[in-house]
Length: 280
Image 1 (cartoon, rainbow, N blue to C red):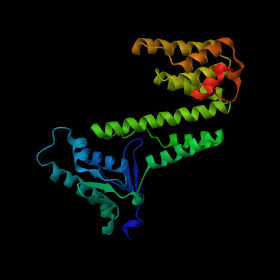
Image 2: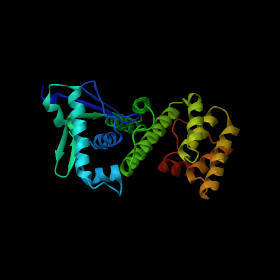
Image 3: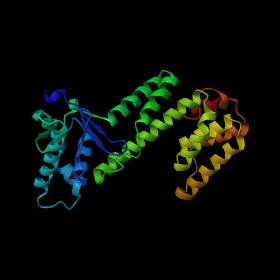
Image 4: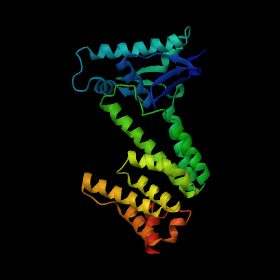
């Protein structure tokens, strides 16, 4: 079988795992796992030797860093060969290029790829007001997460940035799924989840606004206003600032019992909509 017909699957949204045509690939050494994680996050692109050195050793690489890095790459190729013995082409999935290495895009598939595909589909559905499909696609994206990204991998400077970016994307997908569910009238079902995620992200104004809207629509006006005051207290205490104008407009609308709060759309969430709403 040619190497082009092989498929390397890499899971990064949780514990790191590798599979070659379904067979587990063992990569147990900490720095070896850092290398494969960084290569998988950039599948199809060359990760340069300086980038790998910075990730593995920061400002204090050993004198033998080039040889050591070559050893890690060789060990990874050997691990892939062990998963599919007798196929020398497997080793070419992890390619060498000028001053760097890469995992061949056509032969490497990650759960990050799948996550991003579902997020794009969710955004496209939301843009056409297909909120059922948007909720489903964002939900499928979130189901791919099995814990914090690369939870069992030692992280240097570059992987710290990469994982922080992934966690922001996860939170963004969660916000968009909740937004779609609110538009669909699922406010009562969302209360438990929103209470939890808002408590975990006490300075996130979007999540607080979603919680306020859900509580108001479920008939809990006082609790809705309490959520606003918790946000305001945290922001004042931690940053010395007030909640943004959108959340303040939402509080004003709740205090006045604005009928727009019961509408399907969420006019306080998008800036362009909130301007129209406040002028109405």
